Image 1 (cartoon, rainbow, N blue to C red):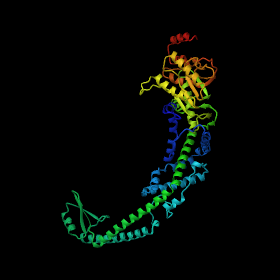
Image 2 (cartoon, rainbow, N blue to C red; image 1 turned 60 degrees about the horizontal axis):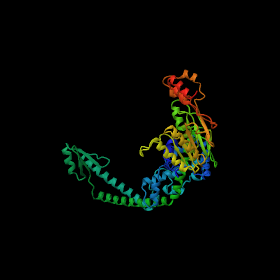
Image 3 (cartoon, rainbow, N blue to C red; image 1 turned 120 degrees about the horizontal axis):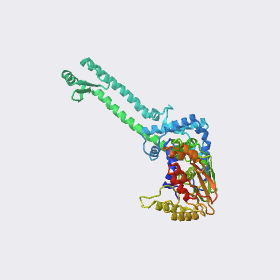
Image 4 (spheres, rainbow, N blue to C red; image 1 turned 90 degrees about the vertical axis):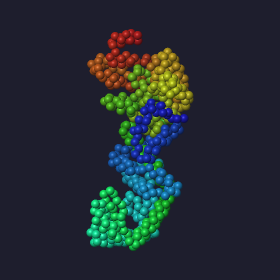
Length: 540
């Protein structure tokens, strides 16, 4: 059973939250992609994860330490393919060996940093330097981050390179002697690469060069002719010997790289273990940063069927309101198994409460701190929602048909201990049938094992026995006479957002749904004559 389907994730803005968790290493990214909700029965594992975050909060608040860790994380590359190649017997390139050497040094530095600042180490974040492999990749103990196939790897390689150096010196002496003869006889200075470029217009010089035993024609352009030293027999012999030595050097270096690749392959478990530890530490610290950023608290995990939120905040909506220089009103609610109904006028925040409960529940079950004053949470097997426009273009279903499809799926799962969120039940059909269907669904769900939270605009739905009735305060406490002095033509929606009280209050089953629609219409400037007529029909 899927914990949350894509429609629910989107409706609750869960991806928005995940995007706030910013991992820095490829291994941290891997673990973030694999993030899953903790299952029922894994309460101890979830509590352990939340305790780890709590234990690292002081570290997360220390800019110096976090800066040092981030500096190391930013240089870590994904080397899993190279390690796998080493395991499978492939010969690693010098670039791969260089990157692995750097990774070993980063492991060492990270381990030292954690020890220096006494950063808590957990079983799955234990960074262990691989000193033996460091020495193998740095046999001369230079301590440099660059990689080189050192002479220390092989006496044969050392001998080849010594002979090669001697030959190169002798070749330079031979070429120097030829250059001196060319200067003496022709009065010409050769380039550092022992070449000479002459203008085609200088026919006399070209003829002299062509007659010289020391220079050979190489190439030409439409303006110049290029010549180079003509090697004598002695120089040819030396250069051939150098080519042979270079070939031997390459073969010996290849053999050494093969040996080094095997050594790396043999230590794959230690390397992979560190990759995993780095990834989990990266993700854990990202959760810490997130907790601090949203001023989150550790949810209290319980085995009871309860969700209790005190002054919770929906992060995406809070950001939207902040951009308009408005504040999000924290919401508190407590629900248990069975059905809880939220009533209130449109624009009164019923959907916000629904989304808030679903989002914070998902966050808690994914092992995140939540933006609230406190939260008590019992794990759910699933979260499913019917929020927003349920119209399905692909299947040709109407809004109501799409809604029924989602609700039916939720009902079929309601015998499990899950969380069902339904916004404005049966809103896509006519009021009479919508009321009948809504009442029947609510009556069915109240005896199931799932926790169900529903919003409705229908009277007499929330007065069924065994239901909990919550009501949005909305605009019920607003002084409309004072408000009239503040309203201008251009800011009516801002006024509604400013004064709308999204908090919930527990009411008895016979409490009528507040008629905030008229208040909203009044703020938006609907003709007073129409307002009065509507009030008559409502028996005000």
